[in-house]
Image (cartoon, rainbow, N blue to C red):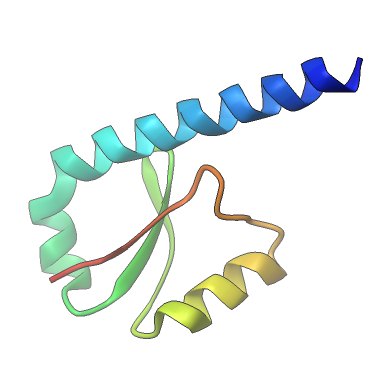
Length: 77
C-alpha cells in the first residue's frame, strides 16, 4: 500500500508547514530584527537556513536533502 505511505508523508508535510506558518506569524518581529533583507527557510519552529539570495538558499536546502514541501521560504522585509 504505497498510497497510504505517500498520504502519511503528505499529512506530515502539511502539519509541519502549518506549524511553521504559526511559528513564523508569532515570531515575525524578532525575525525582522535578525534577518531583515534576507530570505529565511523555516521548518517547524525554527529557521533552518538563510541567505540574501533566494535561489542560493533553495539550492543549498536541496543539497542538504531538504525539499520545499514542509519548508516555508520567506523574504523578511
